[in-house]
Length: 235
Length: 277
Image (cartoon, rainbow over all chains, first blue to last red):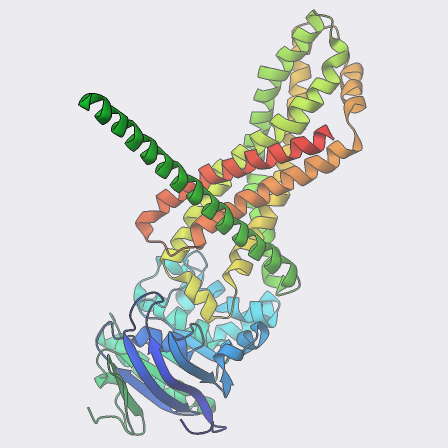
């Protein structure tokens, strides 16, 4: 791999993905994501898309290979640096995005803001309300997250990921299990978010059709590794 | 002849099997002690290193645990204290007076109630109420993927989940034990008074106060605080330390109760050494 470019956000070199103690599900992944790019990563279920998101966000170390985030090697990061780095990434998980079930919708969204910025609740609420409004979560903001349908839990995950204004947004199969109306909302909203502050967006999907759009980069993950295309619509 | 050899072989086989079973059990036990010990050290280290991190989130979480497992348990602990007072202390006072051993009431009360029975009973109550609830809560959270969600938000699950429970239960346990001991002593005297035991409140409480030493207060605080922290850490370990499926949560709860109880009794045994010195 060539020298790090200052616009490089994520660099994976010879990375193997999978669970510790078992054989890798994908190996030999070389990938470079630059600032402001919109990547759509396709692949069948079980090929390691969620692992790819976890490694790209610095949440997990790869089984093999090197991972650099904003030019810093993941293995060389200290605890404080790791926390600072992780705040530059927003992650939305698959299947409901894992909200904290015993917290209300509002508390789920407030948590990262209050924890990392140590804001008073009233002050944090003012910031959170704009995101809650944009997600259409206002009518249910005092309900427990665990009581809500999965589609709304997924939006809580998106609001929680965006509340700290991350530079990179990673979405793991966000359209899975949603109806066509919800899918349209997601594709439109994420397209808008990507344009704000030249944010880098990475989306994984079983079927990439809904995300294909001119100017977006596309890749396909399988057991052989990651195959990248310059533009969408070339599968 | 042949029968004798078979019997000897059988005997050797059983001995070998028993030795293997015993060895496996000892190794398994040592592994559990090592893992819970490591988890405790990590929890203490996170508590100290992140003491000043996010006080606006962490302080309400600690007070929430004190309220849930301390204040809300108060009626139950008062009931238990009254029962202990009536069933054991009242009868003990009455019997000691009957055989003319009133002068031993103070030291017997301090040894039995303040040092041993009070802390252990409070620990059992806290374990039944808080320990089980913590394993179910955290086990479910782990099974639903909330640990990964917190890690993605750069929030340490040990800091967010374990530290408030450890501190909250330690504080709750100290408070509950003090209330249990006081209630037991007052109810014990009332029961003895109703049985016409010739003893004034002044001499009863005077004897107890005279038998108490400064180190009783220090060790009581230390012991009960540690009981609370141990119950919290073992429960959190069972709920969080390994990936769980939802079906595995009940087994984890049973393990947590047995292991917490074992840890509290072992800790109690260590404190006996301090009392004997």
